[in-house]
Amino acid sequence: ATPAPAATPAATPAAVGGGHDATKCLENGVPDNDCCAKPGEASCADGYDKTSTGRRCYRRGGYEWFECVPGASAPPRPVNGASPSPAPLATTAPPAQAEEDQVTTTVAPASTAALANTSSPAEPCVKTVRGWYCIPCRVFTDAGVHGPCRRDSTVLASMVFPPTQHCGDGGQCGRYFRKFVHRGQVYRRPQQYCKIYNYGTWLEHDTKAGYCISPPVEAYTNGTMRVRGSKEVYAAAFKWSMEQSGASFECSDEDFCRGRGVASGELGRCECACKDGFGGARCEDGP
Image (cartoon, rainbow, N blue to C red):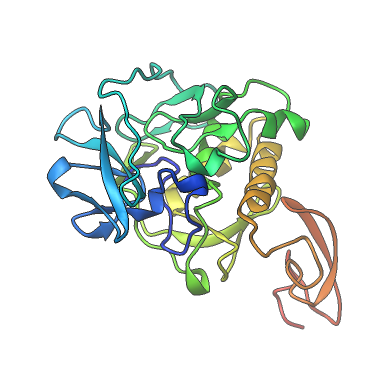
């Protein structure tokens, strides 16, 4: 896998409308939720059929995108589909990239089932070149975020916050990225950790409502937060993703403040007024 929004834990919702479900992709029998593998090593979980797109996901090595669809309902696809040309990263944040991981704004492919009930195929959205998930630009503009849709923070948000990228049971996360490069250092299959976002900070979490993120990706997001408006970008993507996935988590006394304080605000920008001597962003520190 690569630093694209494809690091999906096993405990994820099925695809909407019977289309491609990235959580069913396997590489050598192991979950590989970016659905990028050599043809002979790619397969799908039981009950799903593999369909090759004919498009390379690595410049070398024979890796190709593939899809997993329920039963024998694989939709016909052109072998040589056109794809947008990659563009360079767009902000002044510290450079970080992975092989073939440039920023691009594109139109969500019709087979991206996670967007089927939220965005028309013609709606502008933003994602990494190798990513399968595209967050509609309106998510950011509707939240009052100014600036271009295509920039480091929005692309990273599409990587971290697909509605299917929640943590597993007990906040478990695996190693889904093949490689991620940040500030010249190569991280191979970095371990991910379950966290939630709250206006400029990543907070540890231990339920399926959290999102899996690795330390180098988190470090890169923290760098982009120095750019004006980026904190709001992540807050908007986090809140929208939670709503789309139906995750059981709210900016409430019980969920966010762990029953130890009074919550105010909204997802992505939630605050706790802790009680009984507790402290911390989520009243996690004991008296």
